Image (cartoon, rainbow, N blue to C red; front, top):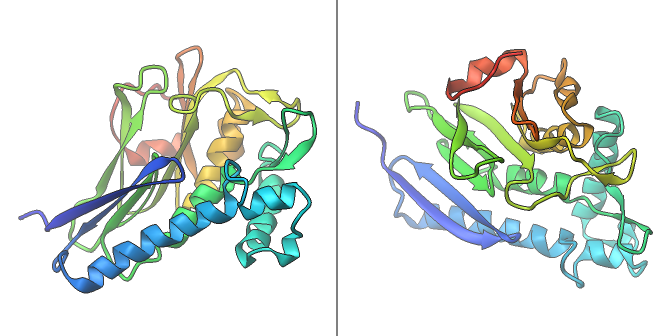
Length: 261
């Protein structure tokens, strides 16, 4: 069977490369070009609204007390509600109220926004795609086409893959120190997590895969316990070099030196 035609587009958004891969006929058509433009436009708008690095973003203005959530872009209230739900789902291990350099707590929804925005952008009028934002991936596969293969980078040695997972639909999200250094905070102690190098979570929704990956990394080497009965599976690499996986993760595995629990 011949592989379907494939084309990719890449733009730098949210401080990271975002790539959109499409498979199927008509990839040079005007409707496809409009679809691609709409995907990247939505992600740029999400960055304008939620970036904690932009002084003019609505999140920055909310944190300075210049803008009420109720008066902000409608996305802000939606994300604020989801952040509260995420905190409940993870027993407080995912928390968007974090201490700033001056000790004051500020709202930082970044741990949810990327997955939420990419998932929203992936509501495409296209049946076979892979949208990848800095390692957070959402895919859909047309009947009869091969699964998408998603590499899991080794956070202790980023030049190699520790695993490759295959997906026909759904998402994979990774949280860790390979690209951004130590930035995930244990919300119960208010200090960066020290036990975990990286966590990858696979499941139906990128929004929640991203939340669970962040929460598991914050909790430490026992973080995969947060995935019990959620419908999500995960792989965790500790600073000690040991690889831990949930029981159902094997259904997504294709290769790699993964140690079963």
